[in-house]
Length: 395
Image (cartoon, rainbow, N blue to C red; front, side, top):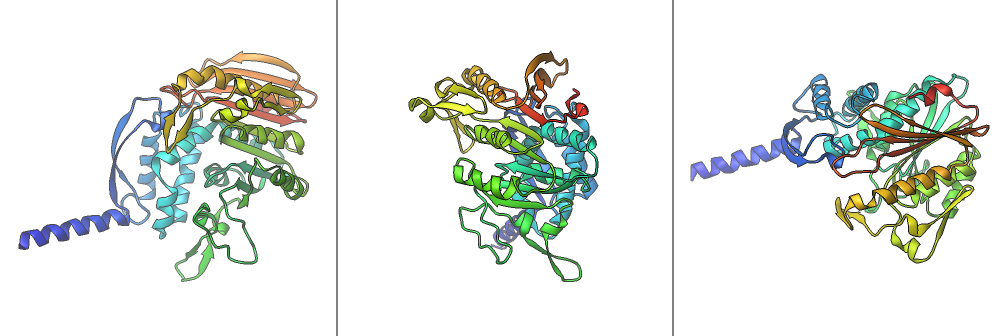
């Protein structure tokens, strides 16, 4: 009987320790089809803000997690900057394990970094080659929790960036005058607007701890009214140049992002399209129109979609030609560029580059390998309005 009680106490103690954060995670993952190596099983100690590894040990552990990531060598400095940013997140939320555990899910953060690295590199180059006379505003479309902006807030020089605006329909409406109560369908924003208590017992907001401020904005890009409101309240009122970032936009959201660039005074643009549009558009006989370009929905739509991380539809490799055609049409719909050129890069992480330039500006479509093992969504589209910054576009 005594042995049974001892076992129960031991199990309870172990469970309490795990819930506190010093835990062992064993997971077999395929890095969301973005890992250059085969599926691997990890049995690694996941450090917590109160237990386990020091910040330096945590940084070393992060380096191990991304050592085989696609693009790791091509974007070496961007990866190092981003890992340092993650360490800074950890410091920010020290003492608040609930927020940290919600933000830091290793596989999710690694996936976000892999997909965002080319865009982070693009923005870093832009800032390195801009003067200090004007500050940029960066609009992060379909931001989710805001990982891309969270990386950039830690990395970019704050004397060159005024703020980030994280746009997503899952946010609650932010209200400066009153405390907004989050509903179950809202995305939690405690990592941005939540409060913390310092060593003196004083309460402060995480909002003030970000090197460059992060603002949330509840907007549905598919709602034409929301787009008009963004033009009125964002683009027509922002002082200084604007950058639009649109990473992992599914279906017709990519069209909306390009419309936003075409129809507003936006200096720089970065798009990584994701899933193809659903068949409903093809069944209606729709024609997609962006800028001066149009194409038939039936040529780019697909029945397949993800459901809780599982693919439901035809074999994904069947969709690659359709996705490539989708990306080509998105590129053509951006209203800058005239004459074109085709380049091929010899690096392992890069393929073809299509570049078009004119008196209006420049646009580039890059094939950057960040998905392997059956993944094919490796297209990144970038654009800049005149005056063009040559250093941004060097490969």
